[in-house]
Image 1 (cartoon, one colour):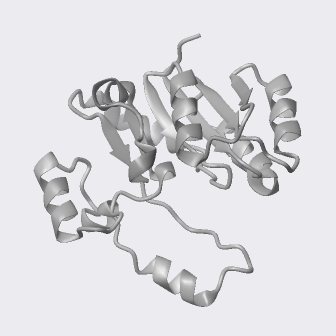
Image 2 (cartoon, one colour):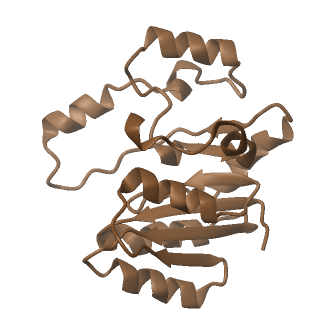
Image 3 (cartoon, one colour):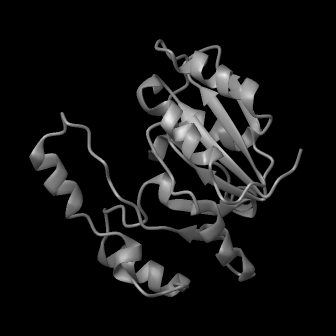
Length: 194
């Protein structure tokens, strides 16, 4: 099966939010996608939730690791199992807006674009300390630096990375969709760098 988008969901003990996460993907206005879920030896009800969804929708591919390999390698395994032209990471406690894939793919009409970024909102659990919320809300992200830009050049991105050295201005993985050619050219995530 080939599709336009592979939504990659690495899972480890994500049962608390997993149903809402998967539902947010399945409810997309854009439907030419697969969902690749790889469970990394969860000890909660994550596997049962994933298997239940797999039986309901043929676009869901579910894999369970034999041993725990950690987040980075588990995400890489999601990528290697995927077949889509575009890859969209969504973690087990992320939710995406109903038109997320449609909007992010609209940039693919620009042939030189290999990655698209989206804004994001944080929804905090009740037990997150207020100081952590304030610290996180002060972070600067690339879409905020170019609020009306439909396209940000490589030079502008490099300049921002230098001026905000050591900060993650790209954002969490859920903020990104990228073309498969990026993995083909540069490889998977290096777990030593994460």
